[in-house]
Amino acid sequence: MTTLRWGLLGLGGISRKFAADLRVAGLDLAAVGSRAQESADRFAAEVGAPRAHGSYAALVDDPTVDVVYVGTPHPFHAEHALLALRAGKHVLVEKPFTLNAAQAREVVAEADARGLVVLEAMWTRFLPHMVRLRELVAAGALGEVRALTADHSQRLPSDPGHRLQDPALGGGALLDLGIYPVSFAWDVLGAPTSVTARSVPTATGVDAQTSVVLTYAGGQHAVTHSALDVAGRNDAVVLGTEARVEIDPTFYQPTSLRLVASDRRVLETFDGSVPGRGMQFQALELERLVREGRSASDALPPHESVAIMETLDEVRRQIGLVYPGE
Ligand SMILES: NC(=O)c1ccc[n+]([C@@H]2O[C@H](COP(=O)([O-])OP(=O)(O)OC[C@H]3O[C@@H](n4cnc5c(N)ncnc54)[C@H](OP(=O)(O)O)[C@@H]3O)[C@@H](O)[C@H]2O)c1
Image 1 (cartoon, rainbow, N blue to C red):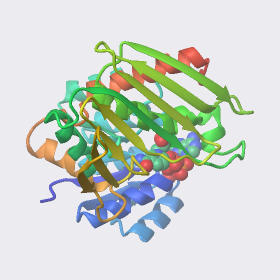
Image 2 (cartoon, rainbow, N blue to C red):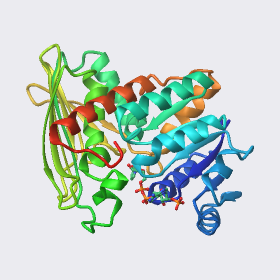
Image 3 (cartoon, helix red, strand yellow):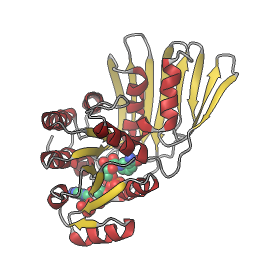
Image 4 (cartoon, helix red, strand yellow):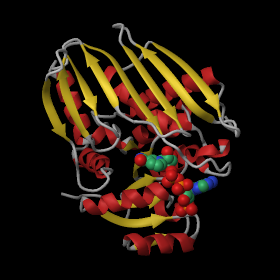
């Protein structure tokens, strides 16, 4: 059952994919908004949106829009989420939630003050294989969870003008790719007690490759890797005293997993394939929260998005990555 009318803010690559998944799920795409009318018109025609706005202000003021999806580069997430919240709209904001934890706190405070839902579009959390992983961990199927490893590495454009290479657009591996394994570690193991990071910069001064070790009160370890100049395997493994879960590549997209006992017997194989790319599940979760009058998703409450930004801030402090204007 669809209840909300969606507006897309910032019409780049990921907004195009999200629009397709809204359609896959039969959700209501009401309007799109770009900085230029011409690109809004073109995008609306391409995805079949009834209304096209030539400014973000016009999109958030559109009375036919209930919820705004923010698909702009990370340095603008907070500004655009606040714009939508102040216009009375619920917000789904792309990952990373914001550029840093201070911005994240401001966005969550605004949503709380207005009684609106804000959700980070960390779409992996809402995918069927991640739901199954959380069930297996909660049921004790792994025994005691002791460690995990996860990586997200892609060979992405090296053009210095590309968003991913540009400090002014929040470029670098960590906030685009590394956030997936770090958020995954938060999902499985909760709040770390220590964060240790090492990194190598690009010629433009953002991080090309970043590794993070997180440790926990119970002695658990999480080891994550991200890089934007090599294509990785992009899998994840959660190790427990009785069994491990192997999440097949690509761990952050719809995929399969296996529960494997310490003696190597495969206890369960789970196929998490879905129609479309899989970004519809986060939209369905936001719709459910609004319908049920709740402000926080159990799978990713806003305070956890803030805490993840605090971890990423600490990683950036250790690797010396500061963005313009911070
Ligand atoms: N969930 C996922 O799988 C996934 C995948 C890729 C990216 N993302 C996230 O989505 C966000 C956008 O990434 P993308 O790859 O879609 O980027 P993109 O293709 O460059 O699109 C970003 C859009 O933001 C708008 N924008 C506003 N101010 C801008 C500025 N100063 N410079 C450039 N664009 C500006 C533009 O839309 P208008 O011209 O229409 O205003 C632009 O098309 C990032 O935060 C990224 O982390 C998520």
